[in-house]
Image (cartoon, rainbow, N blue to C red):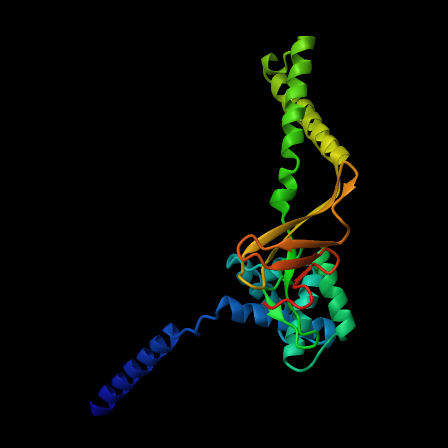
Amino acid sequence: MWELNSTFNISLLASGQVEKDEVVEKPKRTVGEMEQEFLQALQAFYYEGKSIMSNEEFDNLKEELMWEGSSVVMLSADEQRFLEASMAYVSGNPLLSDKEFDELKQRLKADGSEIVIEGPRCSLRSRKVYSDLSVDYLKMYLLNAPATIVALGLFFFIDEITGFEVLKIPEPFGFLVTWFAALPFIIWLAFTLTNAVVKDVLILEGICPNCGTKNNSFFGSILSISSGGSINNVKCSNCGTALVYDSKTRLITLPEGSDA
């Protein structure tokens, strides 16, 4: 009888241990940890020619990052390469030379990539305080607002004097004419008028290295009057610090002799 009870108790303990083991879960990884593991897998595959995880594990990791809303899995090949090179440099095993890294970073800046944009910092080599510039796409699009208003006015004026009356065309023809004829014409006319007035336009924004306020600068020409090339001198709207905007390097620097 004792042996039967002992056996029964041992079985209960064993089943309880199994049930306890079944509910034990691995600690949930943070998004940052998963992103680092994702980039390490890419680096090992592309630069070292080996796999640190199976294809199924990599696909599951990528899918999990997508569900978490991570932008790392949506990066372009150059952006992924930049992040991998940055991680490798920090770990003491650089993948790219300084020249290659700078060229890659500059190319990403020109493409409008956000991952290369950094805040104010100081260079020990040049002893300069500087900050990165990025394209202000909102203000770039708003440049078309005046021409769009003119295009709309011109369209309705022509519509009125010709008696065509687009808005009174019965459906479904009114919908087709509005969205596939009138609207494309208005957009084309607005861009044409804008490009006739403003050429080679580029609006850059960056953070003042002195106070952290965002400032914008316009590059291009209005009615053939140039803004002054690739260098603009800007005064911070908050602290009044003189800033030098360079559209080629996409950097803000302080003039020689200035103190941040």
